[in-house]
Image 1 (cartoon, helix red, strand yellow):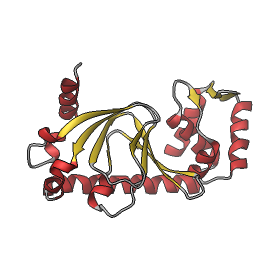
Image 2 (cartoon, rainbow, N blue to C red):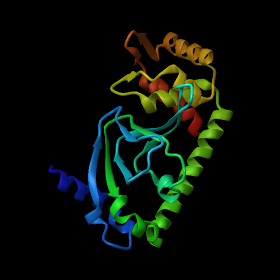
Image 3 (cartoon, rainbow, N blue to C red):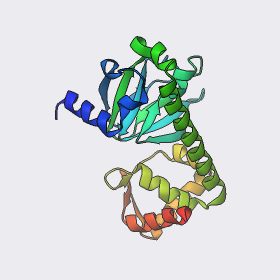
Image 4 (tube, one colour):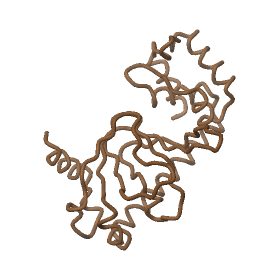
Length: 220
């Protein structure tokens, strides 16, 4: 499928044109990001608003000591750069593709003023931000009320690719709000239980159904 055809198919699937009260088509393009590639760079002014339609991306920031703090994952469908659009003075956090990501890219240098003055679009963004806040509150509640084994199983399923879990331990521990030692203890426990296999390349998932059963314990 040609790029123009794929963009048209995606816009129809997600009713993207209906987000706006004016014809948005002249201002959009299809952007593809391979795993590990930056979508938004920290501290830089946002000139494009992205709408993630395929894939998964990480929201992060880098501390002064060089340590990376992972805030959240973006899943389909999500706006990337929405807060920076609404508040240009805010510090831009980094967004990196975790898997191959397909995004509708909106050129704000050409239509930023129209977008910010479009009540139809602003209502869409407000509803999106409300859902994002609710999801964040739910994740915080899970971090506070469920033992690490359940949350780690869910995290492994979320971040694994092609049957492998290879996320940095420091990043995972910070995201799950646990100590590095506690994280290693539970990973070793998963290996003893036959859920994972530790190799020099990372952790191979041996029992996805077992991990899924732990994840479902949090979902009731």
